[in-house]
Image (tube, rainbow, N blue to C red; front, top):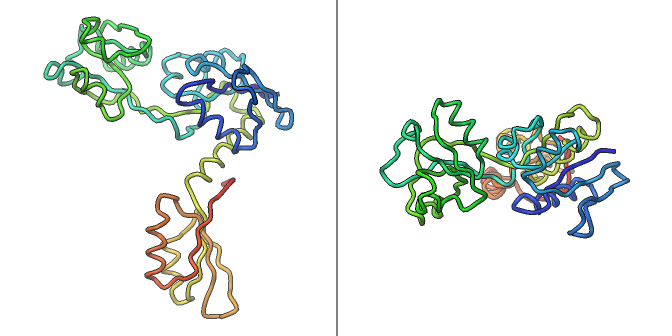
Length: 279
């Protein structure tokens, strides 16, 4: 039985649970349950703090888990990333008092506060910069104002939270993080199935099916707009001057594609959601 670690709370929890449900797995019915069996798929889920998942998987206690790339690297676990799941995106940057720091070298010898001491420490060590890392469990943006640190390394989205504390972002991106699937046993059959199913969910979320009719003389132009994943499906119609076309297109491009097809001369343009996929 495959043992899968799933975030029990936080920004990764809800989306991870939704993806597993869409991938055909049975989730927990009681939100307080620490584990749940899914005998049909021969798996058992364990609901853990996101920060602890890499440790459990890296130790071999659990076979595979969903966590953040940032948490995986900060844990220094033996587990490795086997797939990106494209949700829970975050970017880590340095910030300090305006005008004090211009680049990474300016951090030499100062105190840097962060909730990810190993991640930040390893990044600075790779770049040959020595600092005193101040480990905090959250709200690191207050560390400079309170005199605990000279600079901070934190998650940045718009930067408004840091600016509200009188801080200025500087230096390179430390890490672009996202939710990832991790394991030390990527060759297990159950993990291969899990990875394939989750990839199918990602495809279903990112693409739609588009169907349309177009004249044969315009087919080559139309299929350049909708090349599909490998190749569009072309079907004959009762009228030999027309054909029906079906292809997958990126969901974000749907309306632009429909506009282009209509201008080419395509008609009966229909778009359908994809509920599951295997590519």
